[in-house]
Length: 304
Image (cartoon, rainbow, N blue to C red):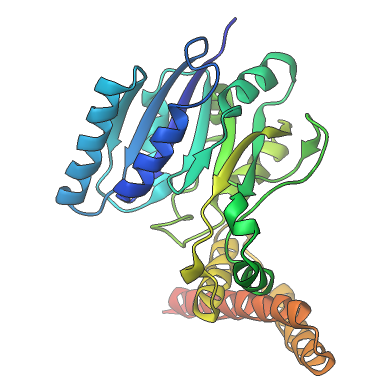
């Protein structure tokens, strides 16, 4: 049976970025042959921005030759918007894209081919750096230090089994959601901020489902210089710690030793002058510090 692909793009209302992504989808190979639709999970916080997204969606639906429509979810939360959209789409394959990426020309055909001859239930596509960003030495130096923008290029053979997911470019068979449930709405943007893809992958694997790698189904991610800074580094690792606590339920016996270890390794690598490892330790410190503070707050709340 031929595949039908529903492409869900959750957005908080970034019209310019959605426009760029839609333009890239309109240039993919196989668009006349492969059945697909584009569905915007419109999570704009105010109605004016929501209306601007809807106007763009309607424009593309009329002009592109691709069915493009939206599902409106005004309550903030990426996972909430995606979960509301999933049961309304028609495809047996559901692709998820962040709104700040651009798909490569072979993206759609690579997805169709992967699920035609691979046994996997979920596909992880590559998340690549734009060629012009690769040549920018200042950006590369900042990225090496902070690692606050996601890129993914495993170089694995096609169909290699993996255990986790990065939600900016992934595809899920519809029946997987029926088996393991949808996304955890406590997590991700609008919730605790991060890790909704990692948590979902853990349930997929626990259920005996398989996640496979397909590097050809790639997207270019935007390397935003404003995210390569100490403030964003701290925010990201803090949110990661709070998010992981929400679904891992780590104990004090796990959190405190890891926090102490991060302090020791940060001091050691600072003395050694190893900037990258110093920042890795610093990230772990923010992560476990946030977990400890959140754990303490919840414990105190339960005792009231």
